Length: 253
Image (cartoon, rainbow, N blue to C red):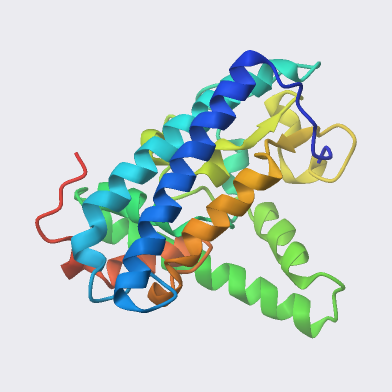
């Protein structure tokens, strides 16, 4: 995978970063004030989660929309171009990690309306169990980085994301988290498979936000700590499902 790239600050880049920064600062300030009123470090907990859902959903929708503006500004700066095409889905065999809690809330608020919700949860449970089995094996084998070893091994199992349609496209595309939106490849799809993942033929890369923006994201996410939401997608879906009563009366659509 290519190393992090420093992007030229074009006008579009500066605008996109400014929008994202302003949104995050505003949400951080709002949550800081809410936490202060509660005399706690975290603004969100089980008691006010239901009440805060509309605010969370609105914030996350803007967050993801602004990230797309950021992508539009930075992707053209990759000299070799992006080879990703609709319907590929090869990268959708990874075990998605580093999910922000507010993104998990928005995604679940969408899929909970689906008649396939229970099938999604069963698939998430199966994939979570597989990953943790691989992680346990890597730890017992004394791997230097057992999590990385488990993630690579999981990708090699060729398990589709539960939200991928038969056509190969994403069934939750408009609600997918940034961890899915930030992954691209400069090489054709035939090289985005396990046998080429760790070779020079695969030139995949991740689009990172500026460090100060990443710090703001961490500040906002810290307010969700009391909810104890997992950072991995599939475990997170299961955690959200256990909070189903909190979504009563909330319709993301």
